[in-house]
Each structure stands twice: as C-alpha cells, then as structure tokens.
Length: 238
Image (cartoon, rainbow, N blue to C red; front, side, top):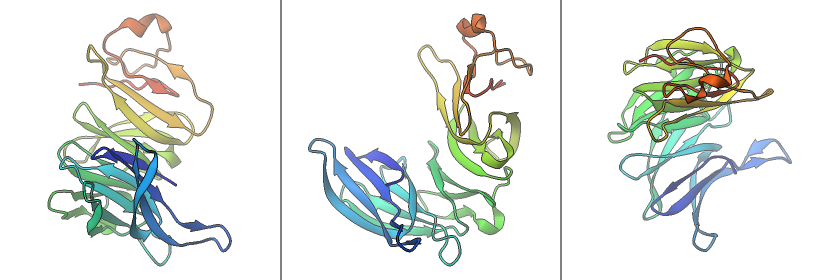
C-alpha cells in the first residue's frame, strides 16, 4: 500500500504491486474500503505502480501511477468515487510519485528529475507534461496549497519552494535534510502554518513571518502571524 484519500465516505488506497521476488511490478490496483465495516468493497485495476491518490473538487478520485521508471511512465487514472469505477486516464509521462489537487481543480504531480507536471481535473487537459514541466529544482516531492501559493518540497536541494498562480517560484527556503512532504494548516483564528517532514532529525522552531532572519525563540509563538516548519522556520510574506 502507498497513498490514500477519502471520498464519498470511502477510503481509497493505492497498491503499487511491487514484486519483491523479481523486483518488478505486478498490475497496480486501488482498494476501496468501507470505513464503517473496515472491509474492502472493491478493487479497481489501474496502471503500473500507483503511488498517490487525491480527491478533485467534483468528488472524483485521481490515482497517480509512476510506471516502472524505464518502459512505462506516468499516468493518472480518474475514478468515480460513488460507483466506484475507473472512468478515464491522463497521460503525463516521466515518473511522478506525488499528486496534489488545488481547490480550483488543477492537479500537480511531482517528478524527482523533471519537476512538476500539471493537468486540469475537469477537462483532463494536460497543461505541463514531461517535456514542459515546471522547474523547481532537483527532487520535487510533497505538495500542498495555502495563502494563494503552491508549496513544494525539493528533496535533493533541501528546500521548500513557493509558486505563485503563474507557477513561478516566488520564494525559496533552505530547510532540513531531504524534505519529503509539506502540509499547510490554518487554525482558528486564522494563522498561516506550514509543516514540512524531513528524512533527518526533526526540530520545531517558531519565528515571525515578516523577517528574513530565522528566530527560533519560543517567546514569539503567540504572534498570530507565523509559519511553522518541522525542521526550520519558514518566513512567509504576503
């Protein structure tokens, strides 16, 4: 099992199908689980090596298949969550491993070397494929959205980058070793908080968002304008 998401009151789990006996991939599937009974109610065939699943604004589930990295490549499968059934697929190319869908229905898929691939979940039109990926650095990984920006972990560069609505990098933050995932959180009352997961030792440090200087001072934790990162302060402006 790999990624999972919840849609239509069900849990959708990606099964990569990796075969440890010969280091190849069996056909990938999505398990659909009824959380009321904790039972699998359907197993849907998708492409090779499904790694990530996400829910679109219209309620459909999108399953990102990475392929086998040399002969089969990236494709997103579209699932009717209520049926449940596979209804379509979108060819992306490269070998993306993480999928995230913003509130407007734009899907971003991160590929370690290519960068970000992008498609529209409503029309299923590919906007940025492997030949025209959004450059973010080496090692694009986890993705989330917040404060009008797209946040991307860049594993190989030890960075978290922020993209604007035009998919241009507006800010780059040096963070801990090998960031893999990020989550943007707005509590009540609204406070912009960004959480990032790292492969190395984790630290929690808090600092004001209106400065470029990192200030790991717990005394400023009550400031309502914060960006919190597991690993390092992320000053977020705007």
